[in-house]
Amino acid sequence: MPRTFSHKSMPTLVPILRIFDYAKAVEFYVDWLGFAVDWADQPAQAPAYLQVSMAGVVLNLSEHHGDCCPGARVRVLDFADLAGYRRQLLAKNYRYNRPGLHTPAWDANALEMEVIDPFGNRLTFTELSPKKTAAPVV
Image 1 (tube, rainbow, N blue to C red):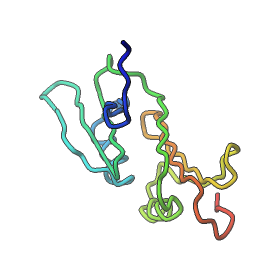
Image 2: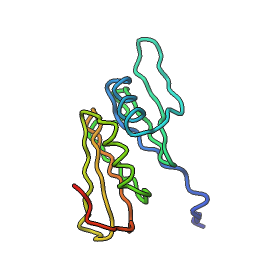
Image 3: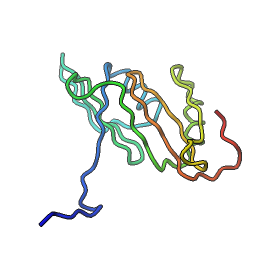
């Protein structure tokens, strides 16, 4: 008999993103985006591997060449107050990324913001059906 799963029994999905420089990863994910480092494995003279998280979003970041390839894309759905988060990011004046907001073609009531890390990985933050008071600033 096939096993049936409920949403309560499903495992947690944690994307692994390729990085090339621990300090640059911390600058981007922690200092700019606001993630926290949950743990880090940094052996001397060996590649680093760390986990960062923010508001329920968990990512593993790896310098190990065999773990994954750079250029991945992760979609973060149901992000609350995306416009406010974008304002916070812009206020930090991170010189390598100035994200805009846009309305995706697939939902006229949603907002999206994409950021690209220093290693070519993209994070697309999506707020579904936000309370729009004006057209988003791009």
